[in-house]
Image (cartoon, rainbow, N blue to C red):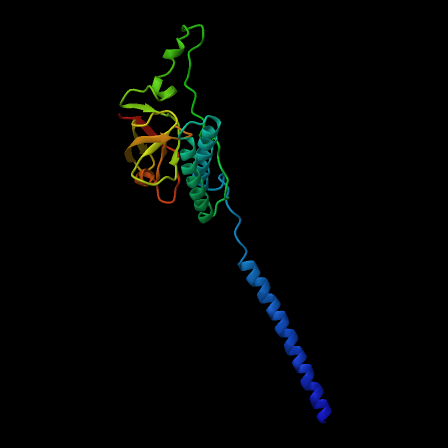
Length: 227
């Protein structure tokens, strides 16, 4: 009787250990599944990621341009923009975006502008090149005060700190620009203080004045030269 009772007890212990092992394995699988990191979103999947990729691309282009044509201040500018690049990458990671993804040419992300209807070639004489478009729309630097410039450009942030300001590849330092976000009708007037790789980049403080919550890109913007 005692031998049968002992074997029965051992079998019960073995069954309990097996059950615990199976249960533990299942718990491990569930834990592994629940802890799996979500796949980072690309710029084509998220407006936030697109804005950050555009900002990163603009700053990387600026750095490349400075290295291609250096001057006495290039090293300082590059060091500043490299710090901005690092900050943008941290924001990409925090926002669940692909870290390091950049849009080298922000204008490439623009929706195509509708073509203006043109008269048949035989019905009107060809206009001189200088009269085909206002100077502010073509280059920006020679625009008169109060004139709309950078038509079709999106606006994003440079990642730089400090008081509200802008950087540009078309306007010299000291130029004042008014940027209006047509999606929320918020505007800010800022002074250009440095060079960048696009028509207008707003620093963090200026971008906060016109941004929509959670967005790092203004697709519908009106940019005016006011001084």
